[in-house]
Length: 240
Image 1 (cartoon, one colour):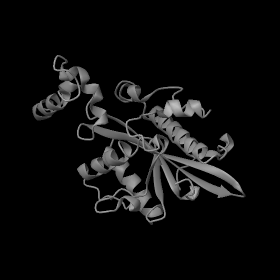
Image 2 (image 1 turned 180 degrees about the horizontal axis):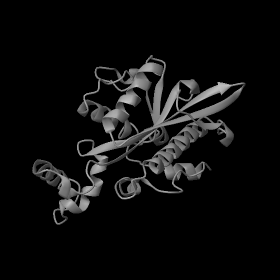
Image 3 (image 1 turned 180 degrees about the vertical axis):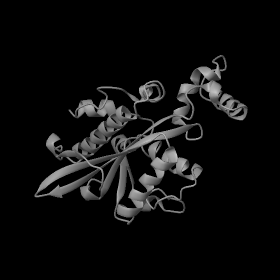
Image 4 (image 1 turned 120 degrees about the vertical axis):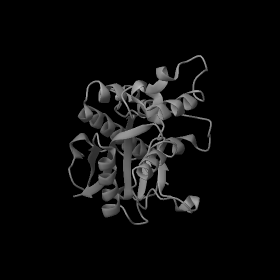
């Protein structure tokens, strides 16, 4: 995996929140369904409303508020990491814009996606929310019927496991042991829901999400024993 052309990888991270600000705003059917789901994730003596803040990690009960991506280019023998974030209260609009980017620029078989714990979370979450929003899956996410070696999905957590599937290591820990600047210097994933619903600060979430993309890109480079991309060459862009 480490001999892949680094300019053919789209690094990404997503941020998700519950579909509503609190449990009381769900309709009766959704309340009942969340109550059933809650029983599978917490003890029976915990009220489902008290754990509704966890709903954002489930595609059936959450929504995506930000997708950040990073793409490495080489210009004048220098590597540059170009960052772009899609963030919006309107999830369908966000996903349509992201889908358009994939279809326009990353629609051939030589491109890869890469994230941290992305095979378990980011990729399936995006695909499920696209289907729920009536969006046709792009080539990079449409894995139905493909053989394992045909799926262009990389995962820095899986690469670190080396086949040890019971082992989980956070991005925060890996950045620490590889001497990569931490992406958790402002908020962490557990605070995204409050920043979204209480602070109404999508831009802050996007900045946090982009830091995770930078960290994941840097981690992949460390796996290859490559130098990190210098700060002056990390650029936020509006277009790819």
